[in-house]
View: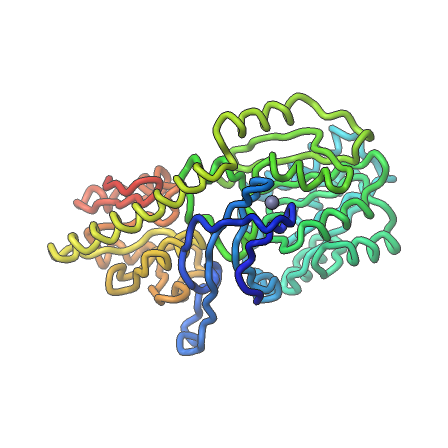
Length: 410
Ligand SMILES: [Zn+2]
């Protein structure tokens, strides 16, 4: 991995200043199987900075993408809600741009091919680009042809040679993972047909700041995009945002439609979103500092609460073995001495251990047998659902701790 990067990956100015240091921690998605508990676990610095020149937020330390994505365990097709959402993006684009059998739709970071299956009913030619080799079998079973590679200028040229130009290119939840957005945008420019549209969707910085969701900072998320810095990036390649949508899924997404300048007409949503960012000071140094201060406060408060409760003889467990839970626990340095276990409904995660501090992940059945006094909700965006599901725990006198945006007991 490279050293600290104060050069902005978007505008290339030496203007990135650190605002939050999560610590040197393992990759948040890497739950450890029982037979690997004694293997060395690499840890990397996780620090976030703000570019005073173009307002882009990014990590200061880059982990090599092959460490992060070659064997990716997140499957789009596993959740019905996410599958429907992704296929809906495809059918929405078919309608909006009147796509037909002559059109090619490319999805970058196509995962198991779920989004592209949404085009098949309309007889549109589809192609996935996905670096994770372990997902290839799944996409090919779904009838989706996939180029197994990272997307950039070189891959775009290869795809162009073999498949021709694309009418629509989608990039859903992977643009933030890209270490070199310039190479990526140049690839889009090469592959996109005249009058074609590139649709990029990312976890929206505005929502992250508003929710105080510093736990969505992971090594995989190299960028934290707002619309304003994104427009500045595309401008460098004579491209423009033509539409911007703020969506509720994944607790707050920004979807931006992009075309070459002069090819398609921008609508009013672009100016409205930029204005809203300006009014709220997002992205901005002050809002970034506020996010960081809140993170440090959560750490102090939660640790002192846990220490106090443990001193009083209380026992604690976690609920929701999530990547963001791992960012939080690593940031706090919490291990099994404080949280006895983490309950999670996903059978694939049960039997594994959290990266770094090795808290065991178990079935939620353990809550009834072990009867911890407190459950720390790590998937705090799903608090209502979890509290409903665990009503027996509450009825028997158990209490919940919600960590973010502020520490509170339910
Ligand atoms: Zn910049």
